[in-house]
Length: 430
Image (tube, rainbow, N blue to C red; front, side, top):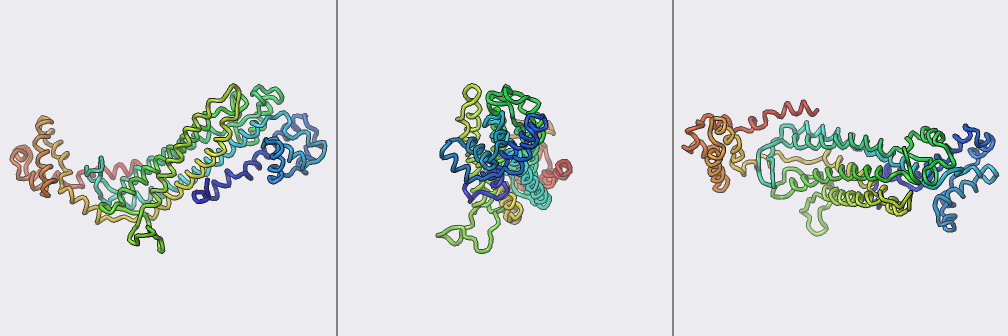
């Protein structure tokens, strides 16, 4: 991922240095276990531990000759030991034993980092939802006025969505926390299942029940799909903010810092750039899911068609999602809300949004639904199209008042009545 959309914590997890450090740790845990099993002499193990050193630049030099990154890694470690004890490096292993187990640890670290981000976001959403619990605004369907809601209740729905994603990501972390030390086709021809169990236990991983030469890639597709789902929700929230920031609406907008410029040409511009940025990166993350699914089907016990794609999609999807969670958290934490504009926009409908309330009341009084609809629809259309107050028109309409009195109409047509259950929902959610 380019540095523009990278934050240090996640970038470090997917760095080349971290990958090689994890690979070294795996090699050492194997040697340690083999020593405990009396396969490797203790003296050789001590010598390896004392002398082994990781040199990434040297690995790259060797790889120019070997054309194989793991072989170059093994050669460099052996070279750093420089004695007969080096023969135990990579003993009984194949490349994927090290690579896939390392990837499992990186994915696990990545999940932990994303869970931290989501927990912070949850707290911010909760705080803002409570803050704007009673900030009334128009709810819209198809982009058209429907019935009033509150801005806090809108944010509460985002809170619930992120909470669900957090739970799924915790489960996904379990799915990806599987390694393998089962050899070239997964049959333990060189090292026993017992050794695999002991090594992976030291690494806080579970052994893949049956691996081929690789961990089955459905685990990675679960991971990528989970990230894509989280990104899709963030895009949904960001799209809402983009709509609310439109000049004709302007009910909320992103924070605009001192010295910030919205346009190189138009000084008046205040654009929802963070939200647009989140939407763009969410598209990128979703696109990686396709490659992830296509990596599941490999030839026989393994080919390496998955490898080149995974070197890009796993780091990039992780880093991009980490970035947009962080960006959205800051956006919603400092969002600027315009309650007066919300009330002003509600007035555009001239109270016609009470139409369902009166429709329901007519049905309660025994009127056929279709007949009730025929009574209410023309009144609401007149109010909206001719800029007349819906409540006043209702109170004067004889077809309606013979069933519902003007006094009843005025009592029913109030926003508090429409939102009467919100307090209970807040108690349930928070």
